[in-house]
Length: 168
Image 1 (cartoon, rainbow, N blue to C red):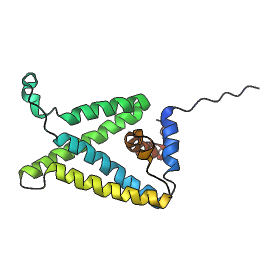
Image 2: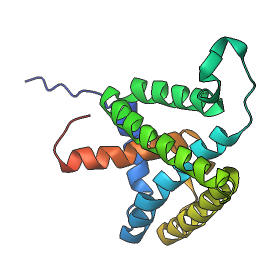
Image 3: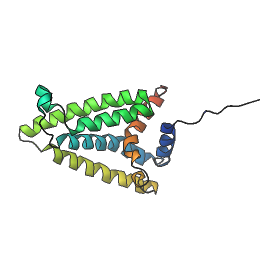
Image 4: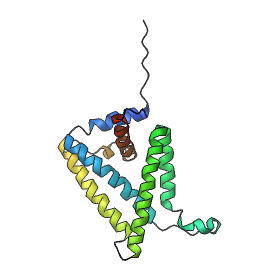
């Protein structure tokens, strides 16, 4: 009798590796909070980088920025890994973009400057993640492969989908 085993998809291999580094319950909770914060802070910081004025964009000049390219690359990467997760991540990025525009409005009203907010969030979330890795007794995953920075948000979304029994 033949038994066929289907090979794991690359995304599943990354998720398995990610799971290995997040076995401690406290570390998992830290990452449930910090992964979205780190992702948001990166998008927000890149969003705040000055972007050139391009005449052919007309009224869309304020809409396109460096984050547009980061988002496009990320969603393409996510789509290649898992179309369903990429669609969900696109919704998350819409929430990020809306939040960033609110922070820009706050900045115009005299609040903190967007890059400052993003740097503070990024540093605080990474310090917490380093504490989580210390609890695990392992070195941060980014030391091994930079792709884990991109995989983290998908890992969280996959956990949500698994809880509801949805295949990704």
